[in-house]
Image (cartoon, rainbow, N blue to C red):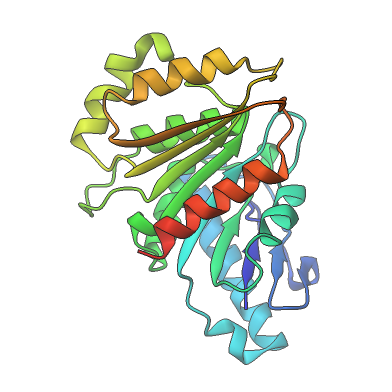
Length: 248
């Protein structure tokens, strides 16, 4: 049984929840946009509580499912989370993995999403960030600068598809010191098409060279004949990467 959640920032009534077969449910809520992080966090808690209640009404067994890990995936400019929710969900058909694919216009702070998962029992080393293009750059930035003083564990990992390193010129001050001191990811996988005209492969190589200074288990995989669009081959490599982390 799998659980896929398209996470939201907004609250709504039960009529706005859509339940699907095979234990998959999506949260679609609309309300007044929270104006402060504290309100945003409370809103996430409220939505999650409602989603669980809805799942119970469909099947009591579903509400008892225990997640073996969480994947937070961020899409590219002009894309949406719903498409990636379905695409990634199809790659983990029989596993209790929570997959969050927020849409950019509703995207909360990544750190809050991680804290939210920790609060609900997912260990930090079983949380994976991923993203395509700008979404991957966001995943790297958020994952490399994430701090949580309540745990000594490291973030499970980060995978990117055709991405780059934000604020590369500030690497030493923005990343390096934080990475050494806090919850740096244990594993990083960077996938990049050699024919990517939107985000040149050289950008990915430069990011890899910087990150190798502070992250031991980093793999950069170039794909010949691949452009900026995400291919099935790349996704299969990302799935293998996630399985390695979540099965430890």
